Image 1 (cartoon, rainbow, N blue to C red):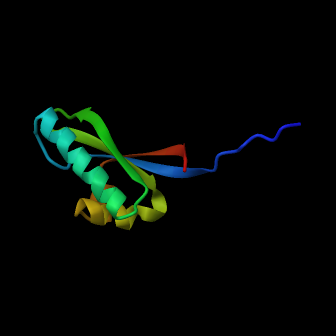
Image 2: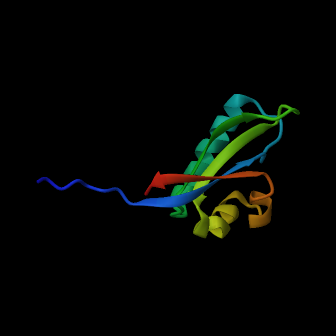
Length: 96
């Protein structure tokens, strides 16, 4: 019987935040690319992606990370952990 490789899964937090207000989609995408590099350089296992817009047309981004890294993620974003969690929060399961 062949053994199956089981991927290790960890609980992840997904936060939906408005970091930049009403900006163009191209600016938002450039900022997401910059923060992706910041996460990588800081060795934080986090991912940021475009989520949508709110009623004021402000860009909303989703940031997915391991809950234990909340302070490190907030530091990369130059906000507090409280600010990071002040928006909508969801739980997700993802492979490491």
